[in-house]
Image (cartoon, rainbow, N blue to C red):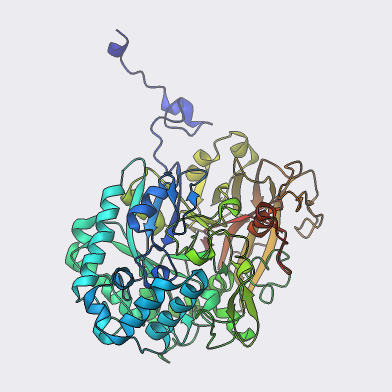
Length: 628
């Protein structure tokens, strides 16, 4: 009988000379993360006060069904389905006033008994899309800016309306969590908005409902909440102490914080940065949301003038309050807002305090307020339900400041979070996030591996399974690369495979940032693998464009340029062993049609003036850090 045949072990000493696998079959005894899981860590449903006011009727149950691949009907009656299911999702509804809007629209007697509550209810019941958006802005402003929201109808953590809403969110997560197939991560958004400046964080749980229900989520409204991130970190510590569970936070939209997201000297309160702030921040916030609907936050052209790809879907006109910007953007704010600059400044703070507070991994997410995690250009349902697909959605005034304005075509069909995990479970995904073995894309499902070590060779790539050598010889994205005596410079192995239904790849770049002996930071972009036989010059750059095959008249493109995969082993030619540094990979696709071009074709309307015809989808890996 075949099942009675004894297992024969291959002589491991014989294998160890050249082959590093643990058995002849390289897939047996494999113990490194090999499941690439796609998800969204930042989705709102009609439970969020702003989403519901703007017309979102989909609830957490609908959001999970949609993410798992089911077809649903949008808030305004459009059938919608993902091209491919997600592997995981976080319903991250706002905790401030959580659940209020559902009861307001339903006409709960206690709300209608107040003058303001009845006025909002009556107006919303008769409002069209545009009018609902205006009322939503009004309610947001009353709650988050002017602080004039009526206390008697506010839903705080000590109210029954709030508690029942949290129970519903958690129950939906438990119902749709299916270990091994789909993970429903429990979470929420803590929405600190100081004079319109965004300090938002999403809180994600490793735990199930048994622990998540023991402590109500944290808000920004005193006396049970605070807009100070340090108070959120205290809540996180208290949660873990009480429940024995685990939580992490990720900040987002630094580009709308007007210089507050990544402080260097003092917090917004005037409190000087100290060892407590530095250590607590990196302990609780291992990740940063680098791209989403409200703009891309990797780099800015004023901060990175030698990077021709830095000006991608840039929102730099003001802060976060829709329709009425309190503070316009000033150029000196930018250095405290963008991920690459924060990574560099983290090296400076590490030299001063011994800990790097901005040693974060990078993820993407939608921040959609529709209940629909749609990040593809050809399936984009907008920031909120008022911007679901229709012929007129591209030409509204979306946000403005005294510096400039943003039309609704400026919304970005972005992004996704990619997690390298051992299995599709809450625990495995959370652990991957904690160790930063994650990366961001702007919506395309580009497959990327990125490793750092001291002895990678081209043969490691030609094996077609670079992860084996990647883990055996070095460290993955999100890790620290330890110095090795006698080694001239580190090598980095990077491999990228195109999205099967997306555009070909233009190039892989490695972005390096470092701190010199004078305490000054620097950055450099290296092209390390390019398509179509183009050359990389002695400066490490390819100056020949890949081209553009986008046909705006049909919202199509020809995948006749670029490459389906790119890979290389690259050694830093400018390495200085005494300097702290970080490295991350950026993978860029060939041009493909932007959602606005697709809308124009499908609805037979003009592409708005100023709107890009094409886009360059991309991926950003978490960095690898080197310290002498």
